[in-house]
Image (cartoon, rainbow over all chains, first blue to last red; front, side):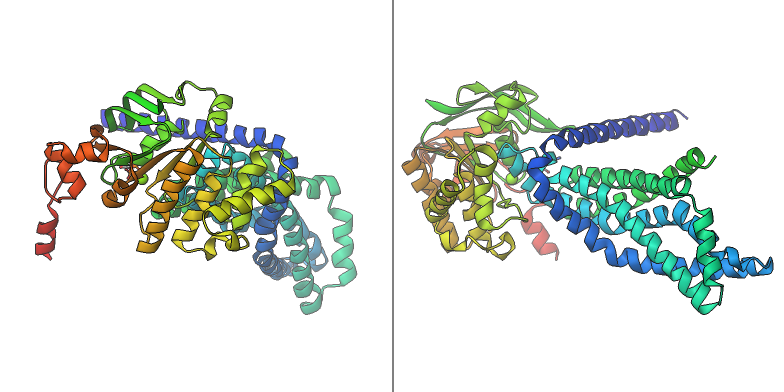
Length: 258
Length: 263
Ligand SMILES: Nc1ncnc2c1ncn2[C@@H]1O[C@H](COP(=O)(O)OP(=O)(O)O)[C@@H](O)[C@H]1O
Ligand SMILES: [Mg+2]
């Protein structure tokens, strides 16, 4: 019993400590935004690495998710004779939920893991210490540009994911299953609210981007500088980021749509 | 005159004692070698001198400034007077050779582009790699990467330069080049060089002053000749690399030869 309490106590202390370190790290990133102007070229390069290189997986997944939603939705709606509502159904699930969440999960797996591995390896090869020795703050030079790039990239990727998803739904619903195109798109136009749905979806996406970037960069920065250490941190990034995305999604949904 | 002085320094990593009581002097304008087996904390010792780590107790003075108490600004200013050659070279992998050497100049000075180009060319010339300026770090051999890192370390004309295991993993020719470069740079730029290593022969060939570290303590310091003449078994074991002796050169435990027989 005492052992159990002791263990709980110890892990609570460890958790509090790492939360504190992570907060301090975030603070350093935010302070680093001061140097943003001097680092614009670093930011654009990272935008390419995190954003453009994630495009293929986002586009392909978006297409399939849209197609599957249309197929499932059609089978359900058909029983009620409401096939015309297919477009709205897919669009609302895409914009409110699946778009932000699935795109963020994919982003955590594709870009988050590579951010952690890259920064962990930079630590292992002493590049971060070298920056410190050259009187350059590694958080400003290495971390901040990646943080900004991730927060810009994910919402854009999410928009692309949603658009391609709707295209997939159109292909399955209208082209294949024969739902009337006018009804499909007309209902979407009438029922999807700009503020209520799209803006909230984007807000979610920004929150997820913040969480993924923070976790991935922190894990890389704090990784143990060996190949196993970096490997473990990379795994931790994907697991933690995914859980945070799903948890945040619940909280944000409760706040936004209630 | 000493460039660096440590007095009764102790340092822990978690519960592990790395330094118990380290006192040493590093004379100005000379090559000082710090010798010790892998994992004794040689890199850690350098990081104490650069203020990247803070001692548990004791005094660390660099260029007559006490390092552990420095505020960030003063510490960064002090680091500008120190060059550091990392074990792995630590070139920034996203920049080419030229930009790597130019990096400290761009970050720390307001020099014009033309001046930077000339300075970088001079530094690369000094290490014999002016014609590698356009290569990326991934295209360099280990020896070349270390020479580029050396050019970067001297870009801001430091007063002290620290070499962390400069010879490890080098072929004989690169090794010879590095040995020559360290000696020449020290003499021509009036630098204070600190060379951390476990390659005894190479280091002794250029060192003016030697410090031997083991088990968290300094076990001997002096000129190579003084150490050679010293009667201590510990020192002899180090200088001649005898596998067996009072200091476990390898991690304590099963002896090497037992392991070989066992297989
Ligand atoms: N960042 C770190 N965190 C925890 N332990 C470390 C860290 N860096 C080094 N150590 C440990 O401290 C000891 C001394 O390391 P180091 O100074 O690198 O030794 P050396 O350079 O002499 O080989 C080693 O046992 C190493 O495992
Ligand atoms: Mg070392």
